[in-house]
Length: 338
Image (cartoon, rainbow, N blue to C red):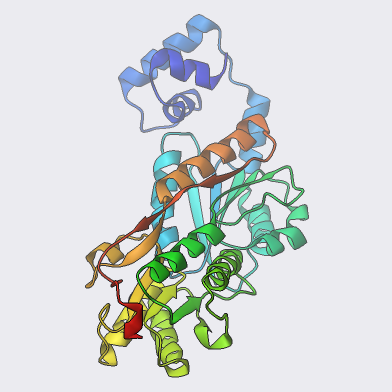
């Protein structure tokens, strides 16, 4: 008989059963009585050794978020919190700068906070390859593909970033655009940015469009950085008719910059983003984007982490689908127009 069995028999959540058995407050008298009666009838005994070990190690999940301005991750944290609220595991969130090494940070946090498991939002496979060997906790990388790494305690759930970026360029090409600029993340520190660069470059080559330095500018994942990047991009290449930004926050910043320069979106320059965050729906013009399924990323990430914590499951790697969302920020144009 386990806590999960008691939860199943009484109809209460695992978290509620755990609070009753450990004498914690914030449980109704009705629930407390029902759970204790069921435990007594079944001869359930709380494993005090396991309880002591858990107290020594902590009882929660730590999420390490790379990037302080990434609204996709903020939305993902909400979904993760919702998933974990149905369990006995509290969530703690720690934010890092885009250029910080999340694995080094995780090692320090693990010693101080003693979480039961780790969720990494962001980062890249090279960072994990170099440093993750010292992490012993069950862990899941969300948005970073760890499938090629040899760590049995590191699962991953991600979007096919290369295919999604290729889809974005294909869409712009199908809409008649040939002079396409790209705002990328830092290719040295961001694994998803490198994959998206690979995908969009592959599509450009396939369509006979040169992959030149003049088509690309690098920026941080923020509105302000997207704004600045758009200005640098049109200064490098005045013929651009469309921009692919590797995040929606970059794309929204870019649209504002184009507006401030007297350029109309999409009439003069079309813009497509990546992520599918809510502000893109309400911005003028509504942002065309590649939507990541944040709810599914969070749901599967939490599920894999709990399997690692509770069952010592071997690492699993999953890819969730993406979707092209057509809105108002991209216009179809006759290629002969330029």
